[in-house]
Amino acid sequence: MIYPEPRYRLAGEQHLLMELGDDVSLVNNLKAIALAKKISNSSELGLKGIKAITDVIPSFTTVLIQYDPRFLVLDGLIEYCNYCWQKLDKIEELTLPSRLIEIAVAYNDRWSKACYQEYCQTIKPIEPNLELVARLNNFKSLEETIAYHSTPEWWVGAVGFVVGLPTLMPLADDFYLQAPKYDPPRMWTPPGTIGVAGSLTTIYPIVIPDGYQMLGRTPVPIFEPKQTLQPFRDSPFLFRIGDRVKFRPICEEEFEAIEQEVKTEKYQYSITTEETFSLKPYLEKKQLVK
Image (cartoon, rainbow, N blue to C red; front, side, top):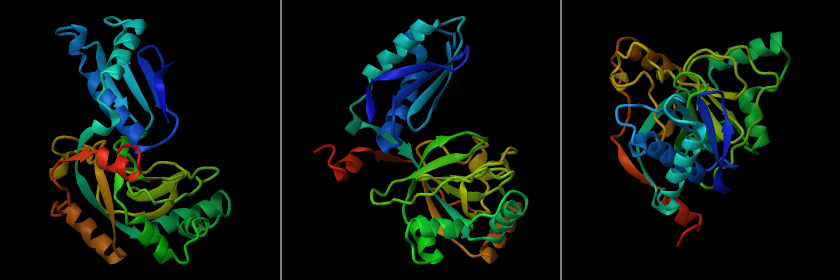
């Protein structure tokens, strides 16, 4: 649910965390995104030429604000955040620019399997990732699991944790895929791995330790620090909060072909131009507004 009023928590000397609700939902996420946009426009503070609020980062249920205490005291920041909260549009009127990005995925790939096998040998034996997800969600086969995961559009609700890593939630109301995390986590994960934990999906931009169940791997870079590829000219990160993702199953042969196209800078990303995403149709489906 969305709290009647934001809850505030200190996050160091220069950060303030706003908690907007207690559940991961599209409604809470769009509230956070809209609020972050309004807060970041600090012109209403009357601080011409001074950047009192230096960064604002929305997530699924929170907004993290970085500020300069030399120019803005904590009480003043909270007062300003409450003002922005009160000035937000009604939930059903929230809109956001959104792109649709296709991500090719080799599900049940050999690279994820090799990572899983190393974990079993060095940490402890566990059930294969895709088999575990299939069993816990009552799928009859791995193919059914793959088809289910690649059917809906996925919403990019947060970007971070590590450079360019997106956290995705399904936009389909009847989508109920669930999975636990590794316990303990892996020591490493191949870059491009598609992972799922809880009801969320992520894509690993680089090699990192983590615990999401590994479903497959994409050859498509989502973090490009040199910014030589076309989608990265404005940012080293492929994804923006508010993007939508469609996973396309591929075989390992196509994976390697795409990987080679990426290396020669010939790969063409499938990215639609920005369109307006409206929350109202989503709420109407859920019968939250009429």
